[in-house]
Image 1 (cartoon, helix red, strand yellow):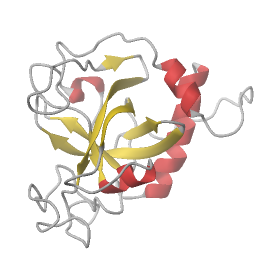
Image 2: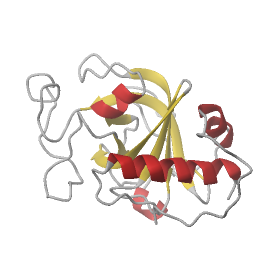
Image 3: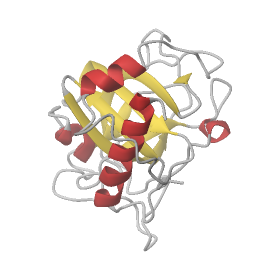
Image 4: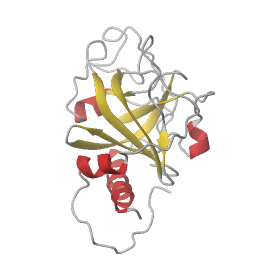
Length: 207
């Protein structure tokens, strides 16, 4: 569940820092059977790693503009735009990449099946870039051999250029998805932020 009861342990206070999270994911126990490419034609060198609490990977960030069309995400601004996302809002509409921070997981395949690690639409994710930590949900599914993609809003929140054609960043983004977590409804950004901060604190404190 996204909301696990607190333990009352107050040994750590304040927001979880990027350094705290990066220290926790310094080592890699692979859960994927192989490695992913960050882009077509790139080397397959990104494993998905795991602990009892989370799965994580370190990659680039390509900007996903799919979903409900808006001023910045539409077929004119993005030649690969599609007005659908793998997961939908509570009203059945596609997610809004301009407004909702979400991450993209690879389609289940021989390399890794995210469902086997209790990751699904609405799962809570922490994104780390530089000294910034932002929380998001799993909102879309991408090609089964590529990894490293997040929504326009997620890129913008991390200070990464969000243009779907020329934006993104070539490396330096860490994606941490908390197993068994869920934000309902998926579009509730405040709930994702609250659950993300709590789960991240439990993760770095080893609870």
